[in-house]
Image (cartoon, rainbow, N blue to C red; front, top):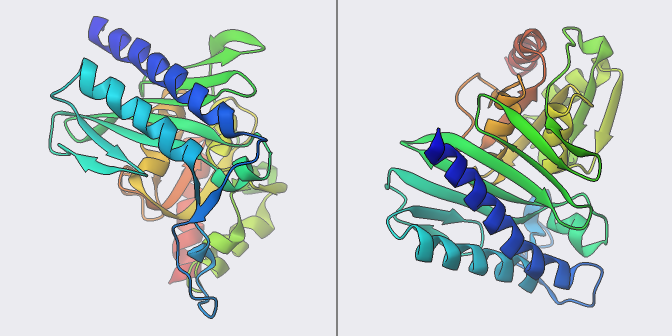
Length: 271
């Protein structure tokens, strides 16, 4: 338990270091590079994949702090790749999850800091420095720290799709096989909202929403969020019910009964 607290404290240190870099570029004149596909004729909606020096700087300072403090730990980061990824402890970093919101001046982005222990997500934090919010968990419990004070995170009961609030970053995430399945679920929910990135999962953990459905995620997009959602009482898997830590097609639900219903719906629509 003491070690877990130590790693949580360290995650806060990483978030503090990343915040200075990220905030320096937010709502400021900053150059944006495209690291995605350049073929304008492609129908891949993810061909525009923006990155800024704020992304790179935030990841650099976190990696430097990990290397100094835990030199035997591994690191997987969106901008600078993998280091000692077979270590027992691996930090998984997305310095700015939601770069499109970041460059548009919208504070629906966050720094994702995850820790894998022996191949499983063990600790996660989403830090939003502009608003001053942090969501973090260890799979058994989850907490919030921000303008509304400190407190526990808890998902809410919602077993019926017709009562659910659904988040996705954008329906454009889904390819031609995935989109009909997503659309079928969206038609059944009470409310759907777009553009949430990592915030959707944290609002689910806070009991503000019920469901997140996405596709095309990488490990650094989801590892930090799994212990937060699970610690708050929710479920995160792939669309087939497999562990979510490698990314891909992801479903997160606040209510386990809702999760099972959504998995069945996605399976039927894609059969």
